[in-house]
Image (cartoon, rainbow, N blue to C red; front, top):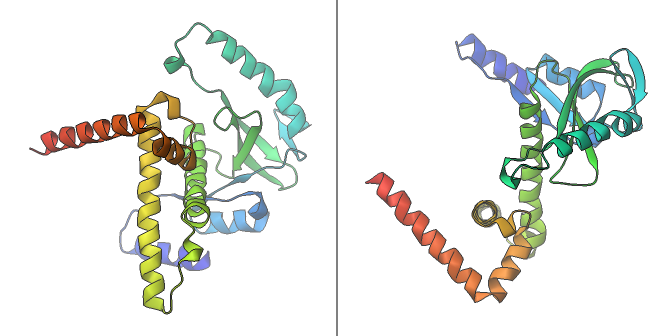
Length: 237
């Protein structure tokens, strides 16, 4: 972390206007020392709370799990009721951004309450930045999740560990090749979810099995890919 801070200062002295970068980590790395180090080295710290922890919101000390039950869920239900007559594509997910004092961390934080892809579980993340927007906080958290899914795809689906190498050059080639495949697999899943509503919550394995077992869907996907390529080529011309 210190090396990053020194590198950032060096670039700043040359006149480079360095943007604020975000460090997002899970609750295993939620501690004051890391948050303080981020603040000293120009990083915006993002992590996960424990719902058994206490915070002070609007002058009242409350356990996070209690605040979710008494404040978040009723507000969420009211939000859903107000959108009941709207088309599905116009409905928005409910989230709540709150400024609070995190008692166990002994510092002021920004809390964000939301559900992950319609989950029954309410997620709570926080940042030491007092001015971070809810959209920014949530986006950077999902980017961390996307990276985790990338490595999960490498390890469990593509089984990168099964490919043996004898030297450093072979290992690098293996890593680059598997990473290339995993990257395009993720891009394909993202594109299929966007183009086909029935797949908007499906993962790579489910989509792979469907494509292998249903030739009609595979033909439809090929038609869409060809149409998309032709459209892209017409823009270039």
